[in-house]
Length: 183
Image 1 (cartoon, rainbow, N blue to C red):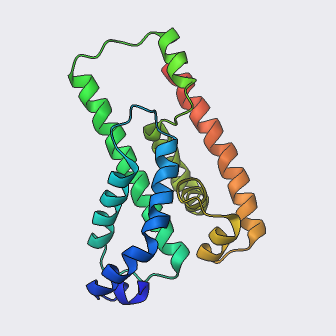
Image 2 (cartoon, rainbow, N blue to C red):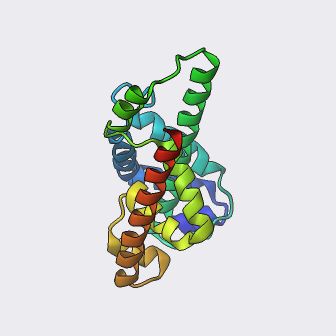
């Protein structure tokens, strides 16, 4: 069905969606679990928005199921980053109060990741090592196992484990550094 859809058969997508909806919902739930409880976007809305963006994708040569979910996860990342940027823009234009250093420390201690900072760090990683960025997208955003990631990227499990470990360390350093520049 993925291949038929990738070749332009729109009916294949209609048959595919019921089969993958539960997994898309699980991916969205993982993304939303990382968000603050007051986040206005719900998992169902995230799935629906990702679906709308997926149907706009034309002529993709889908390799396999893992490739599809990696793309869906990447789209969910984009949606969350766009929502975070829009929210930050609204706050700036609404005359939001300036945050003190003490307040910034409290915000940084919350378990929800800052998708804008993470997106910036991932873009920087992609410029240095695109494959490691793909590994992060598939593992962190896509919830894919090491084995699924290895299959999707046609690499060994050992290579994925090493890329994952190095990418996490690189991102941690990058994110810690970006927080230090704001202080």
